[in-house]
Figure 1 (spheres, each protein chain N blue to C red):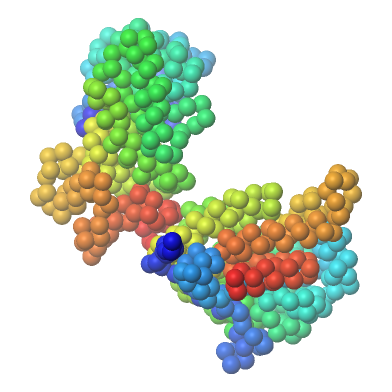
Figure 2 (figure 1 turned 120 degrees about the vertical axis):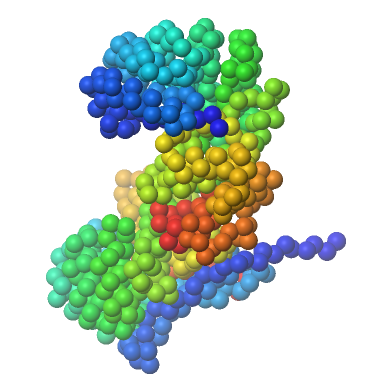
Length: 314
Length: 307
């Protein structure tokens, strides 16, 4: 008996957003990355193709992070002491974008110098995060934004307590912003409204719904992503943004990934487990509609890339 | 609409202060003004008063009853406090606010209501919490609340079922279900049970500027499915207009027509349609957006009117 598969036809779609500018567009990137544009729920190819495949950013830091897992220290080695080197190795590892985290120790001058060195070392589009303290974020992100005018960086992270300065400087210098709300659809939408209300063009907002690692709240994360995506497809303009999530950060916080000693033997090989943790967290989020996943380990990057290829060609 | 006036509530700083000073004039004035504004009963929520209930509950009853004749709704979780209030009441048949389907409360409070010939508000809530689905809330009424009342020979006309309004800010998916619960509960028993809701809960945690709008749009929807009693702020004039327009089917101005249309649509099991609204009128446009968040069509955000 022939079975007719029911198809949804949605009123709304996700905005397609381009990160990075080549010389033709007033920047220095060797290529740009376009994300979003979806017109249905993730990977329902029988309803509509996925117009832009999800991309992977590799997270690097302006200074060698002392609190990262020894497994990450081992794989990145000396490159961790030089953000330019680290970015280069990340590009070789298959990153589509670089996510550079500045730290509280960086002065505004340091921040500008480091961001410029990363831009010179790689042709990939760049996401730049402040250290995560409102005052400090504004202090370093504003000069970075001005010094890189036209590069179409993603600046972040905007949160409800601190978004105005970042949005204003991004608007003035042609950059994008990452808008983060704490796993709450109402607050995600609210922040998007506030940022749009400042006059930020809608093609320059990427929303970050916040997520949790496998075993640490990922189901809250993907439920929020699903709800935001459904709202967007139903036509809610203030949720029609591509989504960025940080499974690398979340997964490498977990005991399962971070430490190899003092854990039950039944947990098995540490390295295998840690990479599984990051990979599975990331793939679950890709399947929930993430447009950018930010990862830390090159092996996870390779695996998530394979999974994305399979999803796209399936 | 039978409004139980909500304004004597300990959440208000003024009420808190007046109570601390045992300011009789304050409470007398607030009670009289609520009745003058149309309240048919007065809710009294001074909290559980764990330490001074024996003095506070009789004091407030005596104070309020010295100026108004309407029923008092004794709104507390303190059962001893409720009884102290009941013993002092001399005027209209009081209301106990509230019991729920939680075993301990359901054991004691209906018996207390029966003993003092009070009405009782019963919440469709179990120990596990409040179910989202309308059917589940109706089932709590049919399977737990009403049988308990039958068991103790409590007159059904004294039972008021409250299917629990939750806020659109955080519990948005509950909002349309509450409308359906109000609709269905009226068929849950013969005779038709009394139903009341705490209207302003729908806008808890919403910025103050938007609360009255959300309250009155939700009210029009609930009146559409037959709501006749609620705990609410009787001083809200725009809300009182909506009540009057919908009750009298007054369509003499565009807003009155619109609120009637919303009530009519919801009553018929339909959704308000864009064509019902004149979106060039900013007020109607805001009402349209409010219907969309209350029906869980559009995700709520504090600035949803800017969306």
